[in-house]
Image 1: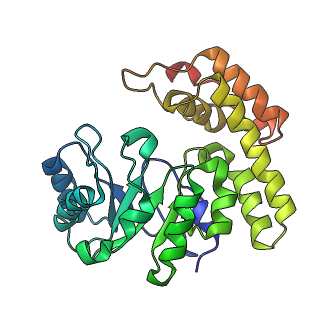
Image 2: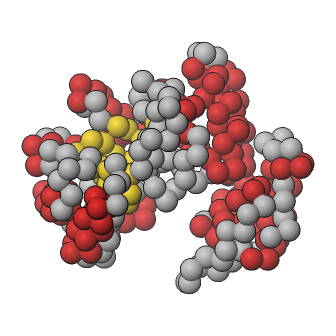
Length: 265
């Protein structure tokens, strides 16, 4: 089994990408859409281009209101790419679909034989813990998506993680993972608290996709471009405050911050 550190390197929010000790060797493409037909077409395209798996969020305009309705939708998407491992992307805060993941997983492989796991992007650790506890013999992948709670999820049995903040807090996250692996839980908790201090700070300023792109540009020097409407670009005030907070927490060295390309974001 790969170490959590190996699994986190290079993870981004756009794809679910479990990792092994040999590095990035699986690309799992998200194919969810409001239309079942579009999801099926995207799944077929993913199979055609050689993806290693597909993932789907619940449709969020005309919502499935119970487990059976949701599984029937997922089943039809999975059937469009029957040779690919299938993952469910659980993110109820954005989809508005409140069906518990633990309930969904009960008997899911009887309906979707290619089901291999889920990305869990919710703060309900009771639900996540029961997903792990009730399915530990099935060797599902349990990928956690709430960066500020990752340490708690690791204790409960998360097998990997996918998150946006790893693009700029990856060093601190890896320090937390290294401490967790050597059972230095006090140090691991201190690293998690440091990550939380930054996330808590930017959430209070107003934090979303636009602000994430701005921070990624600040750290990498690579212009990430503006967000799509209706989102608006992050303000310079936000970026200056985020930069100062990163420096105060010693998450990055001063030379890691490159704000020359921020006007493009």
